[in-house]
Length: 177
Image 1: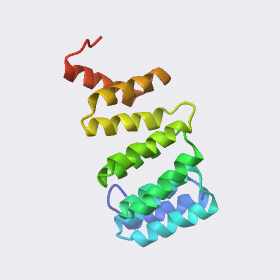
Image 2: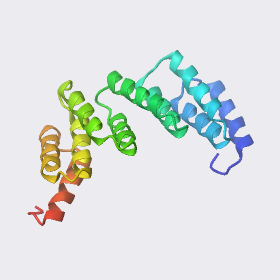
Image 3: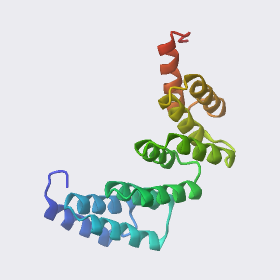
Image 4: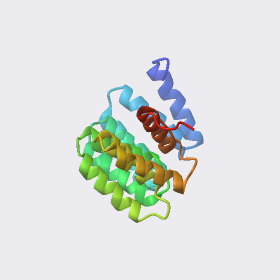
């Protein structure tokens, strides 16, 4: 697929599918092949068939990426919400949902959604991080900074919150230690 040998890629994927039909990596590869071949309908059909077999968080993320690639924002949002519901600890669905909302310029709606999600979790690292990023985008730096500090109080190893807070401190000329 990387070499743009679509026929060779399809043959390799078919051989792999015979060995492990449940592989998420294989599913992602086949969808990438479908999309590269301008077969968006095939990619969607493939992921929807797999969802019928069992909608795990990993499959829901693949579905969301497929829907995003085919410009179906409603289906993308639905799949991401299902992935979050299935496993609230996963970070990628929050990031993708935030990106979707940001691309739609629905920042206030996005923030309300992440605030609601944060209240339903014991350790809402993902939602609070996304709220902080949205507040940064809206120019509400003091509130964003507070959210990132809240995240780090929950999980001191949260890379995104630590990076954003460090950047904000550097921009403000605060103590970098």
